[in-house]
Image 1 (cartoon, rainbow, N blue to C red):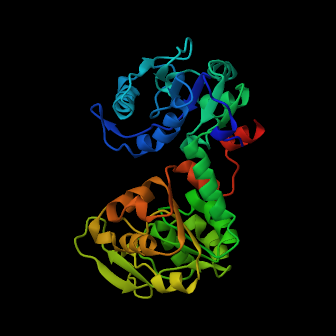
Image 2 (cartoon, rainbow, N blue to C red; image 1 turned 90 degrees about the vertical axis):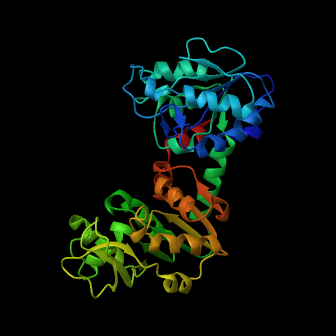
Image 3 (tube, one colour; image 1 turned 30 degrees about the vertical axis):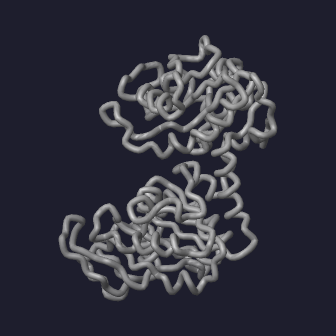
Length: 373
């Protein structure tokens, strides 16, 4: 996979595929973390050439239909201020001008999602160098994230993309001790992730609804808790590895709307109880000597302070840990920002689905395309 430093960008016409899919309400950007993360690559390229085109998708519009609520114009305005430069805003790739510009939402274009050959060729032919810096979309085989890379004259990974691959792969390939933490609602959505991490890790701590399924597989009463009954057998097989860390204590209530929460042993959950948070098992974590920790997903419904202690304690533990901590996923980033700061972690991935796909051991289409080039 070629890097930006491997290619002479001097006076070249360069297209940069970024992930600028940020929350916007009434034309106002609600969180600009992804936009800030994109700046280093843009600035690097602008130091080499003046002809730079910024490309991104935004939301999930119907292809071929313009939707003003899913326009990248507010994002373009943000970059004008951040870079202190005028940025020409264009609707498509039919005539990409020289200078600094941004193309409207790539998902407005027919053929983007389906990796259409004609659109891929159009995008690729618009530039002398195509830079892929949207790791968060690396698991999508779209025209702008796959086809255009393959069909471009020259292509390479941007700074953010390369950094994501380096940090996540270094964790998965770590030769020393690795402990993983996987939370979230369902085993089924993270089945391949857990399977792969069990192969790589000394221990895997589970939390959230995932922990409920494992507790049931271990023979514990879980009451009315969220559970995937059809995954209990699979969870039981994973438990046989003796690598799964289960909670010793959990936080229960009668419903999601309850104002009363009880901390109880996993042996004392009642049939009418719902497990909505777990007590962070610090002793088990510390007993597994860890040089590297991978974390994805909360331990409970942390948006509600009554059920946030497990996730809060986990964040506090990881932020103070001497281990290299690699974290990622939307809810994970939300939890870090709520209880700590991303600067307290070795690396926090900007990706969600792509982060999980990579953790599962899958080959991401964008990486596959960049490796070919």
